[in-house]
Image: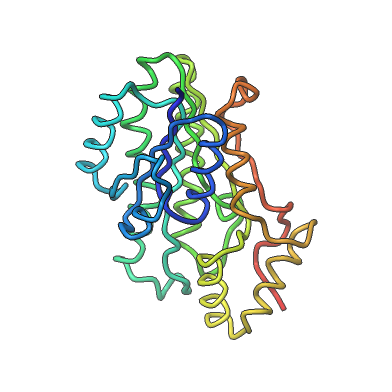
Length: 251
């Protein structure tokens, strides 16, 4: 059976990825730092409490994966929103925390996945970036920087690992319905002296489809990128966002 590893898989996009990969016939492994959420995941999944920014944690995780035969698809999905503030008001500690998880976690995932995939002569690394990785985002400096960074890392992985039969791609979700985006809406509303509904409308009206997206939309794209149907797709940045034109919400 094929095996998929999904970081931050106990909720949101990662949770949807877990269900999508299981439906596609994969043995699903997920990591998360939320132990309560891990306990609520399906019993058919292998669930591991792991901090993706901790090298020792990640080394132990991949040692366990190696012991059961390696991994076919890795979804480096973990990230944190970081602060919503003007750049001069961003604390250095908050900057570092966002970069360490959102960019550093992808690096460590790739670092430990690469040897297993090289040994197998195949594999797919799928990175969750964001529309913040292709546009500038006011008041989101750490998050935008990290999401741009993971795209550069992904393109480097595609070039470096391609000769070994390993593909790397990035998915850029737009505004995704769910609790995490609700938190973003509330913080941006406060920072910009707007209502939550005005910010929501700004995000939606900045897309050609006038809509947020669902976590399952991202999950479906991840399964496609891991499949043989995408066998010659690598080094690509694919947005699943309803076609975002203006990422800065305005009333």
